[in-house]
Length: 172
Image (cartoon, rainbow, N blue to C red):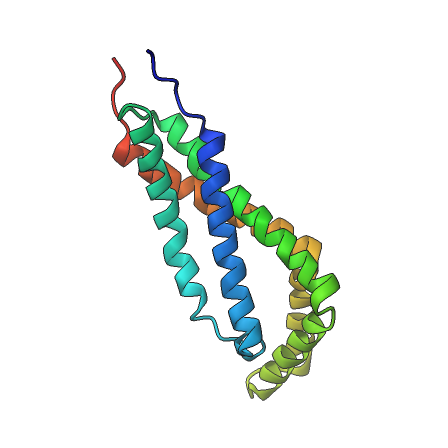
């Protein structure tokens, strides 16, 4: 009986959803504990570590399921797809959060950021307003979502390229 080549999509879907759910869990914890309004970034370190680890692990599992053979193209398909799927999972949560769960949260975040900027004696009122306009644009759920997917895809490409170059095998 001949083994069938596993599909990159199946691996990407499973691991992408896992990675997206991890990011949602981090977001929920920072929101519930108040760390999100405080601007605490350290919980995101968990995600920054998990992102490449999950991609590399998924690529290694894909290789293992494929009779220990891996091409660079397959590694990139798996890793990039994981990154995009995880970003879309988190994007869906983000839209639900911003429009259903707590529609006032972004306004609160903007006020906290404004207060922090005003505390800086080196910032002129004009610089504060310019920074606020930039933040307002990035806090727009649609622009922020597009940016999030693009950045996830970019880093997913980098990590899957690295993983693919390290783990690729020569085909017979």
